[in-house]
Length: 424
Image (cartoon, rainbow, N blue to C red):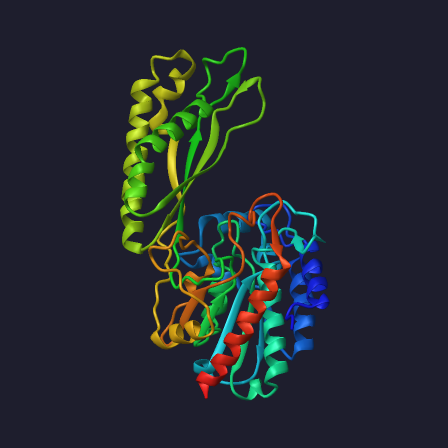
């Protein structure tokens, strides 16, 4: 018996064809509300009711752990940013939180819309694996569980969170975090992300540094007059890769050299630009060490550039003023990580054949909205089909195998039934 049906195909293809690209990465607001409404309509056919549907409140912009990048996008779009990113919570059953099973997935996607299609048992499209596909599979799992046990809503409650604000560095600030603050949390919470059919009960979190140059440019006729931001940022990148990245790895963290932008024209010296560095860390203690290390490495790189590049005429103006025109700003930092264990829930997961990624696994935990989903008497895992890399999430050609979605729905439905038995 297959969990995944033709109706699930159609729902997923509709969602993939709907523009939910995060406004953190695009100069448009997308159509998140339409995607959420489409999902809710199908959920009502299963038996769900809408418990919450609405945009995040403006007060999240005054909260200290809201990333600077969210503030900057809010300044760009105005109040429309949050209004265009509604979150959805669906409920089945009225049991209290200690008998509630919650599924969370994010409806927003990274930039670049991928054509949605089904071919040779595979569904292609932006969000197919991360995370619209798993979100639709969760709905299919509930439908199968109800077919097998129609009185399920009398035993437990099932919540599905369809959140925005996961991608683009928003890190759940106006999505999952807001929903948890409103009290939407269960005894067992499953964050639907690609994890190769084994779960993580821990995550990393990310901190992002922006290195900026604010100097004076010049034309290609007078290249020595410009404070060349391209040369300065390229040199900074080289020094940080050689001198900082090994120390980051030694702390058990990860460093990503992201975008470097000054300009695209060949006939001018760009005097301003930005370099983005992202760091994933396993604990707040490591995060604080990273913060100190990055700031010290940045200061050292500035000193080296001032000393070593003054001899090159093309870089002399930038070298002379490097300390005054180059700065480091934290876009986000000091965010929490998920790290929880639960003997009863872990035994239940083992019982239905869902394994745990042990610390020595070749698969490593990653940053996602699960970091916000902690609370007394609550256990949160990250669990889903596919692999972040091999399924090309955040890249061209993102896909998910229909067999994996069907298998995922089966496993979740078995988990739902086991949770109902445990609750009674």
